[in-house]
Image (cartoon, rainbow, N blue to C red):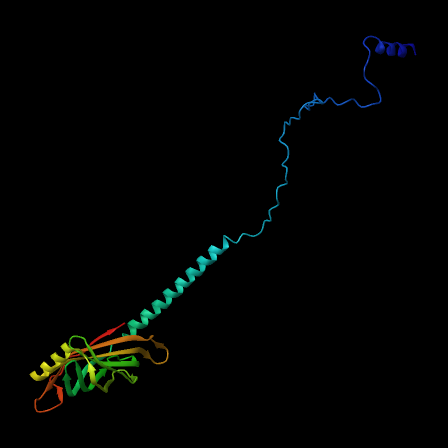
Length: 258
């Protein structure tokens, strides 16, 4: 007991102990880095944002899939068109389509009278149309025939009935064109009158036709415009006769396809 008393006495001697037993020690704000009371607030760490960050909805991104799908679609269409073009080219080379051949077989004109700037005449024309193809038939859906003067002046025109031409076939197409008091201009009327007085008048025959090739029921082309030009069709006139006829057999007509 004396020993414990002396130890207790030893702890109480000297400088008085300021620790209060039974209560937590006051937190030293200055030592912890916080300002003392009455001073401005200084943060060592930036304060949090005034507004919370907006949430972003994360979903599947389609921007990457759309271009890839479009690229695949374009590639597939390109391949398809290439295959179709190749098939069409091979079929074309195998069938070897050739344009039809036209020539003027006969022409007669009467009465071919001119008065100043007007013309009265009628033409009876026969064309020979030949299909040179050995594997293809030709359909002529719409036709239009015209008579023109040598400088290209249109004198008369009329539609022709459509017709079908089998392979290796030759067809004669007959039609009549006529004008009564048709205005052609004073220069053209004078030239026609002078040529008739000289015994021969030159005209031209043109034919426009929408045509298509076909073989059987499995292959055919789309409609194309066929242009036929038959120039240097000379009609001879006898002074004792009112009508004239073809003086010489013209060559093959020029044929273009659009």
